[in-house]
Image 1 (cartoon, rainbow, N blue to C red):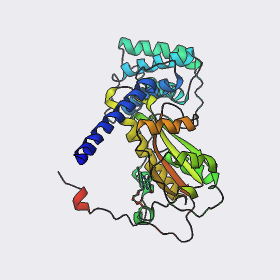
Image 2 (image 1 turned 45 degrees about the vertical axis):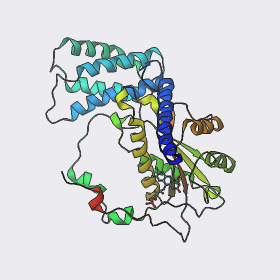
Image 3 (image 1 turned 90 degrees about the vertical axis):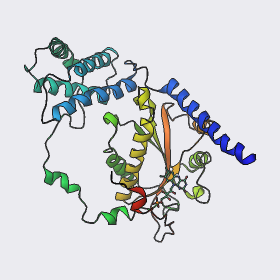
Image 4 (image 1 turned 135 degrees about the vertical axis):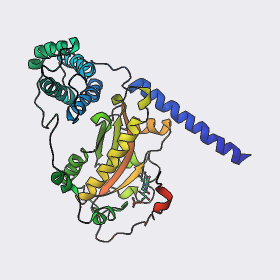
Length: 327
Ligand SMILES: Cc1cc2nc3c(=O)[nH]c(=O)nc-3n(C[C@H](O)[C@H](O)[C@H](O)COP(=O)(O)O)c2cc1C
């Protein structure tokens, strides 16, 4: 009887968790597509202008397609100008739309295309398009792409382990090395390039203790952690119901990239699960009000320098035959 109750209790907990997630989406998600909200609009901008980038990159590029999305970019840019709060993706949207129009110049006479061109001529001088990165489409040779090949991938992949006790006993990790890893991790792919992730760094011992008091899985080593990252994903970036899992997926992919980026610069880490019910998630947020309400916690990550000698769990891997199937 008790066993049965416990099993069904899991279903109830699952349901309560789903209700909590739904309520967070209602309160903080991007379903309103509110163009006055800078962040919400920027995520939306990326989703839309990225379709123009893709259309320009195709070998069989069709100059008369993509104009409906170009018209949405115009709406986005109009809002950025109106609310005087252009963000990164707004600026890139303006740049991408400019090259989209240029690429398709004169190749389509559709009414919508003419409207977009006219409105963009009026808008373009009103948006500051100063961004640090490139935009649009570029060419790369196979040779160039193959520079990513490692002569011995095993050396990289098989030397990453979850490390729970670190060598830097009294100090934090080097800030510039940490920042380098974070910069590398930004290359993680994301749905429509929305990059909805956010990393919070905690190096204050009292705060780490407080944060880890809400996490179930750091017993035995949590008290020795000197640097803690809280990796989040912004639910403002996702608007349709079909994207209800997307922030977990993008956040999970980002987390893994960051773990590998850290490994590439010599910082060890241990993922710490955030499989929490609403009550625990709320408790953590209460202690850390600086964490944006729309940021869902994906994982915490304990990081530090490896010790000279480390005692590590093997964590054996399942055989290929169990996880790979040719269809
Ligand atoms: C999402 C996630 C959550 C995890 N949570 C914890 C945790 O709470 N405590 C812990 O000690 N290890 C945690 N781990 C580490 C796993 O135990 C570890 O990745 C696994 O055993 C494989 O070992 P390896 O990372 O050394 O290859 C977590 C790993 C992942 C990916």
